[in-house]
Length: 409
Image (cartoon, rainbow, N blue to C red; front, side, top):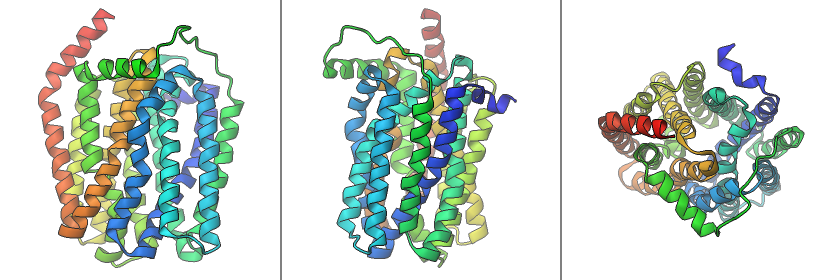
């Protein structure tokens, strides 16, 4: 079936299966973490601080991680990062289940996980191409990755909401820690053909500079990364504010938060399925700004909606737009880049997608404390729409440059 064609590769099937289990635990931990912080502090600002400290390491370390991903064995990097992430989750579970957890410990463990993710994500994104033997199936694999993430995003928050209400946050962290066993086993079971690396190496700073010049010197790559960075900065922190909407706007509890995040996850899953069903990357350039604009409009409409069923529908639309913009950008970049610079370009993608989010979380936390969460969300959505319109205006020129670059190669 065209929708699942990347699963015909054994290594990718192993990766897909292991990640599917692990990511449900990851989303359970994300929901439990935000609810735990808000329960302990009742502070929107501290929600922003935890979001900031958990993601700022990605901004700081991802460029170096990208260089290492181009130099080292990516599978080994991923095995190490998964083991460390498992240890972080189990440590958090122990603190919560023994009733000794404090906010400073949550912040510290968030920083640890942020550092782990900074090295994990560029390696993971650039590793996909090593599992897919036919490049024509690369876009399908990336879209299936996104569907996997968002299938977990749909299930994880719903399960977390039930467990938090029944037994507390600790079990969510424990389940997440144990879920890493599946992906570690899958990575170790793969049979990856070794890729020859250049024998002569420059220093890390030289390779980093080369990656910056390559990525930001080519307008199509630069434009995709900048739009994604803007959306991540101004729009992605919406999930950090969801506990506020669940508790203060809709007067609910963990179940309400789980359903809101689950609705966004359902929309994102629909977006990933839509991308996976596409047979070609042609026309993807126009979908990226359209999706960014849809994401922004969804946030604006949700921000002042007090009708719970309608809000769930708007979260679905928001999730769809976010996923098509994010995964579409990933596919576009992976299609354009040279193999020997893939790790570095995907590190800049990671900086734009994950690295800008901490600044967005900090901004959102400060703004929500002064102008309120609804106005903060509306403000961020407006910026996403503006960025989409600017990208759309430049699209004809960007297409021409991609065509010229393809002909030159």
